[in-house]
Image (cartoon, rainbow, N blue to C red; front, side, top):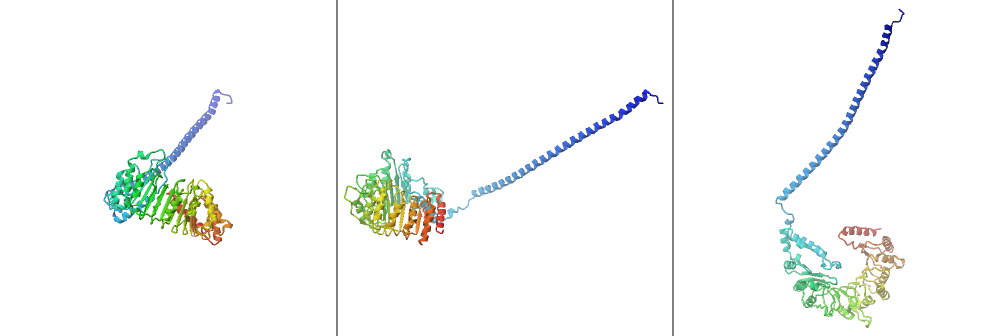
Length: 526
Protein backbone atom coordinates (compact mmCIF):
# COMPACT_ATOMS: atom_id res chain seq x y z
CA UNK A 1 0.00 0.00 0.00
CA UNK A 2 2.92 2.19 0.66
CA UNK A 3 4.44 1.51 -2.66
CA UNK A 4 4.62 4.47 -4.97
CA UNK A 5 2.36 4.45 -7.91
CA UNK A 6 2.92 6.88 -10.88
CA UNK A 7 -0.74 7.30 -11.50
CA UNK A 8 -1.26 8.42 -7.93
CA UNK A 9 1.53 11.04 -8.20
CA UNK A 10 0.09 12.52 -11.35
CA UNK A 11 -3.35 12.87 -9.89
CA UNK A 12 -1.92 14.61 -6.90
CA UNK A 13 -0.18 17.20 -9.06
CA UNK A 14 -3.32 17.97 -11.02
CA UNK A 15 -5.37 18.43 -7.91
CA UNK A 16 -2.93 21.10 -6.67
CA UNK A 17 -3.11 23.24 -9.91
CA UNK A 18 -6.89 23.36 -10.19
CA UNK A 19 -7.45 25.74 -7.22
CA UNK A 20 -4.82 28.17 -8.55
CA UNK A 21 -6.49 28.57 -11.98
CA UNK A 22 -9.87 29.19 -10.42
CA UNK A 23 -8.41 31.94 -8.24
CA UNK A 24 -6.88 33.68 -11.26
CA UNK A 25 -10.16 33.52 -13.05
CA UNK A 26 -11.92 35.03 -10.06
CA UNK A 27 -9.39 37.80 -9.84
CA UNK A 28 -9.77 38.58 -13.51
CA UNK A 29 -13.50 38.65 -13.17
CA UNK A 30 -13.27 40.98 -10.19
CA UNK A 31 -10.89 43.33 -12.07
CA UNK A 32 -13.26 43.47 -15.01
CA UNK A 33 -16.14 44.25 -12.71
CA UNK A 34 -14.12 47.00 -11.03
CA UNK A 35 -13.16 48.52 -14.38
CA UNK A 36 -16.73 48.43 -15.54
CA UNK A 37 -17.89 50.06 -12.31
CA UNK A 38 -15.20 52.75 -12.53
CA UNK A 39 -16.11 53.44 -16.15
CA UNK A 40 -19.75 53.71 -15.26
CA UNK A 41 -18.95 56.02 -12.34
CA UNK A 42 -16.79 58.23 -14.54
CA UNK A 43 -19.50 58.39 -17.16
CA UNK A 44 -22.07 59.24 -14.51
CA UNK A 45 -19.85 61.97 -13.06
CA UNK A 46 -19.22 63.43 -16.49
CA UNK A 47 -22.92 63.36 -17.20
CA UNK A 48 -23.62 65.16 -13.91
CA UNK A 49 -21.07 67.87 -14.73
CA UNK A 50 -22.43 68.29 -18.24
CA UNK A 51 -25.96 68.58 -16.86
CA UNK A 52 -24.86 71.25 -14.38
CA UNK A 53 -23.22 73.27 -17.15
CA UNK A 54 -26.24 72.83 -19.36
CA UNK A 55 -28.60 73.89 -16.58
CA UNK A 56 -26.48 76.99 -15.94
CA UNK A 57 -26.47 77.93 -19.62
CA UNK A 58 -30.19 77.27 -19.75
CA UNK A 59 -30.81 79.59 -16.79
CA UNK A 60 -28.68 82.34 -18.35
CA UNK A 61 -30.42 81.96 -21.69
CA UNK A 62 -33.87 82.11 -20.08
CA UNK A 63 -32.81 85.25 -18.18
CA UNK A 64 -31.74 86.89 -21.43
CA UNK A 65 -35.01 85.85 -23.05
CA UNK A 66 -37.00 87.43 -20.20
CA UNK A 67 -34.92 90.65 -20.41
CA UNK A 68 -35.44 90.76 -24.15
CA UNK A 69 -39.16 90.24 -23.67
CA UNK A 70 -39.31 93.12 -21.16
CA UNK A 71 -37.34 95.39 -23.52
CA UNK A 72 -39.58 94.38 -26.38
CA UNK A 73 -42.68 95.14 -24.27
CA UNK A 74 -41.25 98.59 -23.44
CA UNK A 75 -40.61 99.25 -27.12
CA UNK A 76 -44.14 98.15 -27.95
CA UNK A 77 -45.53 100.55 -25.33
CA UNK A 78 -43.38 103.41 -26.63
CA UNK A 79 -44.40 102.66 -30.20
CA UNK A 80 -48.04 102.69 -29.11
CA UNK A 81 -47.61 106.10 -27.47
CA UNK A 82 -45.87 107.53 -30.52
CA UNK A 83 -48.57 106.14 -32.76
CA UNK A 84 -51.18 107.78 -30.57
CA UNK A 85 -49.34 111.10 -30.76
CA UNK A 86 -49.15 110.82 -34.53
CA UNK A 87 -52.83 110.07 -34.72
CA UNK A 88 -53.63 113.04 -32.49
CA UNK A 89 -51.38 115.33 -34.53
CA UNK A 90 -53.31 114.44 -37.67
CA UNK A 91 -56.56 115.45 -36.05
CA UNK A 92 -57.50 119.13 -36.03
CA UNK A 93 -56.80 120.64 -32.59
CA UNK A 94 -56.81 124.20 -31.29
CA UNK A 95 -53.47 126.13 -31.36
CA UNK A 96 -52.87 127.57 -27.90
CA UNK A 97 -50.74 130.44 -29.20
CA UNK A 98 -53.31 131.21 -31.86
CA UNK A 99 -55.88 131.69 -29.13
CA UNK A 100 -53.88 134.56 -27.64
CA UNK A 101 -55.31 138.00 -28.30
CA UNK A 102 -53.61 139.99 -31.01
CA UNK A 103 -52.45 142.58 -28.47
CA UNK A 104 -50.70 139.96 -26.29
CA UNK A 105 -49.01 138.29 -29.27
CA UNK A 106 -47.92 141.70 -30.54
CA UNK A 107 -46.35 142.51 -27.16
CA UNK A 108 -44.40 139.23 -27.36
CA UNK A 109 -43.16 140.12 -30.83
CA UNK A 110 -42.06 143.57 -29.66
CA UNK A 111 -40.17 142.06 -26.73
CA UNK A 112 -38.31 139.66 -29.04
CA UNK A 113 -37.37 142.38 -31.53
CA UNK A 114 -36.37 144.71 -28.70
CA UNK A 115 -33.87 142.17 -27.37
CA UNK A 116 -32.47 141.76 -30.88
CA UNK A 117 -32.01 145.53 -31.21
CA UNK A 118 -30.09 145.53 -27.93
CA UNK A 119 -27.71 142.95 -29.43
CA UNK A 120 -26.95 145.23 -32.37
CA UNK A 121 -24.49 147.35 -30.41
CA UNK A 122 -21.60 148.64 -32.47
CA UNK A 123 -18.52 146.39 -32.56
CA UNK A 124 -15.15 147.50 -33.96
CA UNK A 125 -14.47 146.03 -37.40
CA UNK A 126 -12.16 143.10 -37.89
CA UNK A 127 -9.13 143.81 -40.11
CA UNK A 128 -9.29 140.22 -41.36
CA UNK A 129 -12.77 140.64 -42.85
CA UNK A 130 -12.62 143.96 -44.69
CA UNK A 131 -15.62 143.39 -46.96
CA UNK A 132 -17.96 142.39 -44.18
CA UNK A 133 -20.53 144.91 -42.98
CA UNK A 134 -20.21 145.69 -39.30
CA UNK A 135 -23.40 143.92 -38.27
CA UNK A 136 -23.41 140.96 -35.89
CA UNK A 137 -24.77 137.74 -37.34
CA UNK A 138 -28.16 138.18 -35.72
CA UNK A 139 -31.25 136.80 -37.40
CA UNK A 140 -33.91 139.42 -37.97
CA UNK A 141 -36.62 138.20 -35.59
CA UNK A 142 -39.38 140.23 -37.23
CA UNK A 143 -38.84 138.31 -40.46
CA UNK A 144 -38.72 134.99 -38.62
CA UNK A 145 -41.99 135.45 -36.73
CA UNK A 146 -43.73 136.62 -39.91
CA UNK A 147 -42.95 133.29 -41.59
CA UNK A 148 -44.08 130.88 -38.86
CA UNK A 149 -47.75 130.74 -39.75
CA UNK A 150 -50.42 132.69 -41.54
CA UNK A 151 -51.79 134.01 -38.26
CA UNK A 152 -48.38 135.20 -37.08
CA UNK A 153 -47.71 136.78 -40.44
CA UNK A 154 -50.96 138.73 -40.26
CA UNK A 155 -50.16 139.93 -36.75
CA UNK A 156 -46.52 140.81 -37.54
CA UNK A 157 -47.28 142.67 -40.76
CA UNK A 158 -50.06 144.59 -39.01
CA UNK A 159 -47.57 145.98 -36.44
CA UNK A 160 -45.58 148.82 -38.01
CA UNK A 161 -43.43 149.17 -34.90
CA UNK A 162 -41.69 145.86 -35.71
CA UNK A 163 -40.29 147.22 -38.98
CA UNK A 164 -38.81 150.56 -37.93
CA UNK A 165 -35.16 149.41 -37.62
CA UNK A 166 -33.61 149.98 -41.06
CA UNK A 167 -30.10 148.52 -41.43
CA UNK A 168 -28.14 149.72 -44.47
CA UNK A 169 -24.94 148.35 -46.00
CA UNK A 170 -23.41 147.79 -49.41
CA UNK A 171 -24.48 144.80 -51.52
CA UNK A 172 -27.78 144.88 -49.70
CA UNK A 173 -31.07 143.75 -51.17
CA UNK A 174 -33.02 146.82 -52.21
CA UNK A 175 -36.28 144.89 -51.92
CA UNK A 176 -35.58 144.18 -48.25
CA UNK A 177 -35.18 147.88 -47.48
CA UNK A 178 -38.35 148.70 -49.36
CA UNK A 179 -40.17 145.95 -47.48
CA UNK A 180 -39.26 147.47 -44.12
CA UNK A 181 -40.13 150.97 -45.25
CA UNK A 182 -43.53 149.89 -46.52
CA UNK A 183 -44.39 147.88 -43.42
CA UNK A 184 -43.29 150.64 -41.02
CA UNK A 185 -46.14 152.78 -42.42
CA UNK A 186 -44.63 156.14 -41.63
CA UNK A 187 -43.67 155.50 -37.99
CA UNK A 188 -40.47 157.14 -36.68
CA UNK A 189 -37.52 155.11 -37.92
CA UNK A 190 -34.14 153.97 -36.63
CA UNK A 191 -31.75 154.12 -39.59
CA UNK A 192 -28.22 152.75 -39.28
CA UNK A 193 -25.49 152.56 -41.90
CA UNK A 194 -22.27 150.76 -40.98
CA UNK A 195 -19.45 149.88 -43.34
CA UNK A 196 -15.69 149.61 -42.92
CA UNK A 197 -12.95 148.86 -45.42
CA UNK A 198 -9.23 148.43 -44.82
CA UNK A 199 -6.61 150.41 -46.67
CA UNK A 200 -5.94 149.36 -50.25
CA UNK A 201 -9.56 148.77 -51.14
CA UNK A 202 -11.43 151.35 -53.22
CA UNK A 203 -15.09 150.89 -52.25
CA UNK A 204 -16.20 154.00 -54.14
CA UNK A 205 -15.27 152.22 -57.35
CA UNK A 206 -16.35 148.73 -56.35
CA UNK A 207 -19.71 149.83 -54.98
CA UNK A 208 -20.40 152.90 -57.09
CA UNK A 209 -24.13 152.21 -57.27
CA UNK A 210 -24.61 151.46 -53.57
CA UNK A 211 -23.64 154.79 -51.99
CA UNK A 212 -26.17 156.88 -53.96
CA UNK A 213 -28.83 154.36 -53.01
CA UNK A 214 -27.86 154.49 -49.32
CA UNK A 215 -27.67 158.28 -49.38
CA UNK A 216 -31.13 158.50 -50.95
CA UNK A 217 -32.59 156.04 -48.44
CA UNK A 218 -31.31 158.15 -45.54
CA UNK A 219 -32.13 161.61 -46.86
CA UNK A 220 -35.56 160.67 -48.19
CA UNK A 221 -36.67 159.37 -44.80
CA UNK A 222 -34.75 161.53 -42.36
CA UNK A 223 -37.87 163.59 -41.75
CA UNK A 224 -39.43 160.58 -39.99
CA UNK A 225 -36.21 159.32 -38.40
CA UNK A 226 -35.80 159.39 -34.62
CA UNK A 227 -32.31 157.83 -34.49
CA UNK A 228 -29.64 158.01 -37.19
CA UNK A 229 -26.35 156.14 -37.06
CA UNK A 230 -23.64 156.44 -39.70
CA UNK A 231 -20.31 154.67 -39.14
CA UNK A 232 -18.04 154.41 -42.14
CA UNK A 233 -14.46 155.14 -43.11
CA UNK A 234 -15.51 155.78 -46.71
CA UNK A 235 -15.92 159.40 -47.69
CA UNK A 236 -19.52 160.06 -48.76
CA UNK A 237 -19.61 163.86 -49.28
CA UNK A 238 -23.11 163.89 -50.79
CA UNK A 239 -24.44 162.33 -47.60
CA UNK A 240 -22.84 164.97 -45.38
CA UNK A 241 -24.04 167.78 -47.63
CA UNK A 242 -27.54 166.39 -47.57
CA UNK A 243 -27.56 166.12 -43.78
CA UNK A 244 -26.54 169.75 -43.47
CA UNK A 245 -29.53 170.84 -45.59
CA UNK A 246 -32.08 168.35 -44.25
CA UNK A 247 -34.88 169.03 -41.83
CA UNK A 248 -35.41 166.31 -39.25
CA UNK A 249 -38.09 167.42 -36.79
CA UNK A 250 -38.31 163.99 -35.09
CA UNK A 251 -34.59 163.20 -34.83
CA UNK A 252 -33.58 162.66 -31.20
CA UNK A 253 -30.25 160.85 -31.51
CA UNK A 254 -27.54 161.02 -34.16
CA UNK A 255 -24.26 159.09 -34.36
CA UNK A 256 -21.95 160.27 -37.12
CA UNK A 257 -18.50 158.70 -37.54
CA UNK A 258 -17.32 159.77 -40.97
CA UNK A 259 -13.83 160.24 -42.45
CA UNK A 260 -12.36 163.66 -41.85
CA UNK A 261 -12.39 166.04 -44.76
CA UNK A 262 -10.59 169.33 -45.11
CA UNK A 263 -13.35 170.60 -47.36
CA UNK A 264 -16.23 172.11 -45.48
CA UNK A 265 -17.20 171.37 -41.92
CA UNK A 266 -19.91 169.57 -40.00
CA UNK A 267 -22.85 171.95 -39.73
CA UNK A 268 -25.76 171.35 -37.38
CA UNK A 269 -28.36 173.95 -36.60
CA UNK A 270 -31.18 174.04 -34.11
CA UNK A 271 -33.68 174.72 -36.90
CA UNK A 272 -32.76 171.48 -38.73
CA UNK A 273 -32.78 169.28 -35.61
CA UNK A 274 -35.05 170.94 -33.06
CA UNK A 275 -35.58 167.77 -30.96
CA UNK A 276 -32.01 166.40 -31.08
CA UNK A 277 -30.90 165.44 -27.57
CA UNK A 278 -27.95 163.09 -28.22
CA UNK A 279 -25.11 163.80 -30.67
CA UNK A 280 -22.09 161.54 -31.23
CA UNK A 281 -19.43 162.83 -33.67
CA UNK A 282 -16.27 160.93 -34.53
CA UNK A 283 -13.14 161.52 -36.64
CA UNK A 284 -13.90 165.21 -36.87
CA UNK A 285 -11.47 167.90 -37.95
CA UNK A 286 -13.76 170.86 -37.90
CA UNK A 287 -17.25 171.56 -36.76
CA UNK A 288 -19.37 174.61 -37.27
CA UNK A 289 -19.59 176.98 -34.34
CA UNK A 290 -23.17 177.62 -35.40
CA UNK A 291 -24.12 174.10 -34.39
CA UNK A 292 -25.58 174.93 -30.95
CA UNK A 293 -28.75 172.95 -30.43
CA UNK A 294 -30.62 174.15 -27.40
CA UNK A 295 -32.25 170.77 -26.63
CA UNK A 296 -28.97 168.81 -26.70
CA UNK A 297 -28.38 166.95 -23.41
CA UNK A 298 -25.65 164.45 -24.42
CA UNK A 299 -22.57 165.16 -26.54
CA UNK A 300 -19.87 162.67 -27.52
CA UNK A 301 -16.86 163.88 -29.48
CA UNK A 302 -14.03 161.74 -30.85
CA UNK A 303 -11.11 163.46 -32.53
CA UNK A 304 -7.91 162.52 -34.27
CA UNK A 305 -4.50 163.22 -32.68
CA UNK A 306 -3.05 166.31 -34.26
CA UNK A 307 -6.33 167.28 -35.92
CA UNK A 308 -8.48 168.29 -32.98
CA UNK A 309 -10.71 171.32 -32.77
CA UNK A 310 -9.20 174.69 -31.96
CA UNK A 311 -9.63 175.55 -28.32
CA UNK A 312 -11.67 178.66 -29.13
CA UNK A 313 -14.06 176.65 -31.30
CA UNK A 314 -14.48 174.05 -28.60
CA UNK A 315 -15.30 176.69 -26.00
CA UNK A 316 -17.79 178.41 -28.28
CA UNK A 317 -19.58 175.14 -29.00
CA UNK A 318 -19.97 174.23 -25.34
CA UNK A 319 -21.10 177.73 -24.46
CA UNK A 320 -24.11 177.30 -26.74
CA UNK A 321 -25.37 174.11 -25.03
CA UNK A 322 -27.21 175.24 -21.89
CA UNK A 323 -28.96 171.88 -21.26
CA UNK A 324 -25.97 169.61 -21.74
CA UNK A 325 -25.84 167.03 -18.92
CA UNK A 326 -23.46 164.42 -20.33
CA UNK A 327 -20.13 165.09 -22.08
CA UNK A 328 -17.84 162.34 -23.40
CA UNK A 329 -14.49 163.12 -25.02
CA UNK A 330 -12.55 160.40 -26.88
CA UNK A 331 -9.02 160.51 -28.27
CA UNK A 332 -7.84 164.13 -28.74
CA UNK A 333 -10.83 166.39 -29.34
CA UNK A 334 -9.05 169.70 -28.75
CA UNK A 335 -5.74 170.60 -30.36
CA UNK A 336 -3.63 172.54 -27.88
CA UNK A 337 -0.87 173.99 -30.03
CA UNK A 338 2.21 174.73 -27.90
CA UNK A 339 3.34 177.41 -30.32
CA UNK A 340 0.26 179.53 -29.62
CA UNK A 341 -0.61 181.51 -26.55
CA UNK A 342 -2.35 179.39 -23.91
CA UNK A 343 -6.10 179.65 -24.00
CA UNK A 344 -7.42 181.60 -21.06
CA UNK A 345 -11.10 181.07 -21.82
CA UNK A 346 -13.20 179.12 -19.40
CA UNK A 347 -16.70 177.72 -19.89
CA UNK A 348 -18.89 177.11 -16.88
CA UNK A 349 -21.22 174.18 -17.47
CA UNK A 350 -23.66 174.14 -14.57
CA UNK A 351 -25.90 171.51 -16.17
CA UNK A 352 -23.23 168.86 -16.77
CA UNK A 353 -23.68 165.88 -14.46
CA UNK A 354 -21.51 163.27 -16.20
CA UNK A 355 -18.05 163.61 -17.75
CA UNK A 356 -16.11 160.86 -19.52
CA UNK A 357 -12.48 161.19 -20.59
CA UNK A 358 -10.90 158.51 -22.78
CA UNK A 359 -7.77 159.94 -24.38
CA UNK A 360 -5.99 158.23 -27.26
CA UNK A 361 -2.44 156.86 -27.49
CA UNK A 362 -0.74 159.94 -29.00
CA UNK A 363 -2.31 162.85 -27.17
CA UNK A 364 -0.53 166.08 -26.38
CA UNK A 365 1.19 166.37 -23.02
CA UNK A 366 -1.05 169.21 -21.95
CA UNK A 367 -4.29 167.82 -23.37
CA UNK A 368 -5.82 166.58 -20.11
CA UNK A 369 -4.67 169.53 -18.03
CA UNK A 370 -5.91 171.88 -20.74
CA UNK A 371 -9.36 170.34 -20.53
CA UNK A 372 -9.42 170.73 -16.75
CA UNK A 373 -8.50 174.39 -17.07
CA UNK A 374 -11.22 174.97 -19.67
CA UNK A 375 -14.14 173.09 -18.15
CA UNK A 376 -15.75 174.23 -14.93
CA UNK A 377 -18.40 171.74 -13.81
CA UNK A 378 -19.62 172.70 -10.33
CA UNK A 379 -22.52 170.20 -10.38
CA UNK A 380 -20.59 167.20 -11.74
CA UNK A 381 -21.80 163.92 -10.20
CA UNK A 382 -20.11 161.21 -12.29
CA UNK A 383 -16.56 161.05 -13.66
CA UNK A 384 -15.21 158.26 -15.89
CA UNK A 385 -11.45 158.09 -16.41
CA UNK A 386 -10.51 155.54 -19.06
CA UNK A 387 -6.78 155.48 -19.72
CA UNK A 388 -6.62 152.09 -21.46
CA UNK A 389 -5.62 153.58 -24.83
CA UNK A 390 -2.79 155.78 -23.55
CA UNK A 391 0.61 154.42 -24.51
CA UNK A 392 2.62 156.32 -21.90
CA UNK A 393 1.94 157.29 -18.30
CA UNK A 394 3.65 160.68 -18.73
CA UNK A 395 0.42 162.45 -19.73
CA UNK A 396 -1.44 160.84 -16.83
CA UNK A 397 1.18 161.98 -14.32
CA UNK A 398 0.89 165.58 -15.51
CA UNK A 399 -2.88 165.38 -15.17
CA UNK A 400 -2.67 163.93 -11.65
CA UNK A 401 -0.17 166.54 -10.51
CA UNK A 402 -2.55 169.22 -11.70
CA UNK A 403 -5.38 167.72 -9.64
CA UNK A 404 -3.20 167.47 -6.52
CA UNK A 405 -1.94 171.04 -6.52
CA UNK A 406 -5.25 172.71 -7.31
CA UNK A 407 -8.06 173.23 -4.88
CA UNK A 408 -10.54 170.31 -4.85
CA UNK A 409 -12.24 170.47 -8.25
CA UNK A 410 -14.98 167.89 -7.81
CA UNK A 411 -16.66 168.53 -4.49
CA UNK A 412 -20.08 167.50 -5.85
CA UNK A 413 -18.79 164.28 -7.38
CA UNK A 414 -20.58 161.11 -6.20
CA UNK A 415 -19.32 158.35 -8.51
CA UNK A 416 -15.91 157.70 -10.10
CA UNK A 417 -14.95 154.99 -12.59
CA UNK A 418 -11.24 154.23 -12.97
CA UNK A 419 -9.98 152.10 -15.84
CA UNK A 420 -6.23 152.35 -16.21
CA UNK A 421 -3.49 149.81 -17.00
CA UNK A 422 -1.02 151.94 -15.05
CA UNK A 423 -0.45 152.05 -11.32
CA UNK A 424 -3.63 153.12 -9.56
CA UNK A 425 -2.04 154.48 -6.38
CA UNK A 426 -1.24 157.87 -7.90
CA UNK A 427 -4.72 158.09 -9.41
CA UNK A 428 -6.32 157.30 -6.07
CA UNK A 429 -4.13 159.84 -4.27
CA UNK A 430 -5.11 162.57 -6.71
CA UNK A 431 -8.81 161.76 -6.51
CA UNK A 432 -8.80 161.65 -2.71
CA UNK A 433 -7.74 165.27 -2.86
CA UNK A 434 -9.84 166.40 -5.83
CA UNK A 435 -13.05 164.47 -5.05
CA UNK A 436 -13.24 163.76 -1.31
CA UNK A 437 -17.01 163.29 -1.17
CA UNK A 438 -17.55 160.37 -3.53
CA UNK A 439 -20.09 157.74 -2.52
CA UNK A 440 -19.53 155.12 -5.24
CA UNK A 441 -16.35 153.76 -6.82
CA UNK A 442 -15.97 151.50 -9.87
CA UNK A 443 -12.60 149.83 -10.50
CA UNK A 444 -11.23 147.80 -13.40
CA UNK A 445 -9.02 144.73 -13.13
CA UNK A 446 -5.87 146.83 -13.53
CA UNK A 447 -6.58 149.23 -10.69
CA UNK A 448 -8.68 147.39 -8.11
CA UNK A 449 -5.84 145.93 -6.04
CA UNK A 450 -3.62 149.02 -6.02
CA UNK A 451 -6.47 151.41 -5.22
CA UNK A 452 -7.83 149.25 -2.39
CA UNK A 453 -4.34 148.80 -0.93
CA UNK A 454 -3.90 152.57 -1.00
CA UNK A 455 -7.21 153.14 0.78
CA UNK A 456 -6.45 150.42 3.36
CA UNK A 457 -3.22 152.07 4.48
CA UNK A 458 -3.39 153.59 7.96
CA UNK A 459 -2.30 156.98 6.61
CA UNK A 460 -5.46 157.13 4.46
CA UNK A 461 -8.01 156.21 7.11
CA UNK A 462 -9.94 159.40 6.36
CA UNK A 463 -10.01 158.92 2.58
CA UNK A 464 -13.48 158.90 1.03
CA UNK A 465 -15.48 159.01 4.27
CA UNK A 466 -18.80 158.84 2.38
CA UNK A 467 -17.90 155.84 0.26
CA UNK A 468 -20.71 153.26 0.53
CA UNK A 469 -20.66 151.37 -2.80
CA UNK A 470 -17.91 149.54 -4.66
CA UNK A 471 -18.24 147.98 -8.10
CA UNK A 472 -15.71 145.53 -9.53
CA UNK A 473 -15.70 145.26 -13.30
CA UNK A 474 -13.94 141.86 -13.43
CA UNK A 475 -13.38 138.93 -11.04
CA UNK A 476 -9.61 139.31 -11.30
CA UNK A 477 -8.55 140.75 -7.97
CA UNK A 478 -6.84 139.78 -4.71
CA UNK A 479 -9.42 138.54 -2.21
CA UNK A 480 -7.14 139.27 0.75
CA UNK A 481 -6.86 142.90 -0.29
CA UNK A 482 -10.64 143.15 -0.61
CA UNK A 483 -11.24 141.57 2.81
CA UNK A 484 -8.71 143.89 4.42
CA UNK A 485 -10.42 146.90 2.91
CA UNK A 486 -13.89 145.77 4.04
CA UNK A 487 -12.61 144.98 7.54
CA UNK A 488 -11.01 148.37 7.92
CA UNK A 489 -14.17 150.17 6.77
CA UNK A 490 -16.12 148.31 9.45
CA UNK A 491 -13.58 149.22 12.10
CA UNK A 492 -13.89 152.88 11.10
CA UNK A 493 -17.70 152.55 11.34
CA UNK A 494 -17.97 153.33 7.63
CA UNK A 495 -19.00 149.95 6.24
CA UNK A 496 -19.88 149.47 2.61
CA UNK A 497 -23.56 148.99 1.87
CA UNK A 498 -23.17 147.63 -1.63
CA UNK A 499 -20.52 145.44 -3.26
CA UNK A 500 -21.40 144.89 -6.90
CA UNK A 501 -19.96 143.16 -9.95
CA UNK A 502 -20.32 144.36 -13.52
CA UNK A 503 -20.49 140.88 -15.06
CA UNK A 504 -18.55 138.32 -17.03
CA UNK A 505 -19.85 139.73 -20.29
CA UNK A 506 -20.76 136.53 -22.14
CA UNK A 507 -24.04 134.94 -23.08
CA UNK A 508 -23.39 132.09 -20.63
CA UNK A 509 -22.21 134.44 -17.92
CA UNK A 510 -25.61 135.48 -16.62
CA UNK A 511 -25.83 132.50 -14.29
CA UNK A 512 -22.28 133.08 -13.11
CA UNK A 513 -23.06 136.76 -12.59
CA UNK A 514 -25.80 135.94 -10.10
CA UNK A 515 -23.60 133.47 -8.20
CA UNK A 516 -20.65 135.83 -8.08
CA UNK A 517 -22.80 138.75 -6.93
CA UNK A 518 -24.23 136.60 -4.16
CA UNK A 519 -20.68 135.74 -3.12
CA UNK A 520 -19.75 139.42 -2.97
CA UNK A 521 -22.85 140.23 -0.96
CA UNK A 522 -21.85 137.52 1.50
CA UNK A 523 -18.47 139.23 1.90
CA UNK A 524 -20.23 142.26 3.38
CA UNK A 525 -21.54 140.15 6.27
CA UNK A 526 -18.20 138.62 7.20
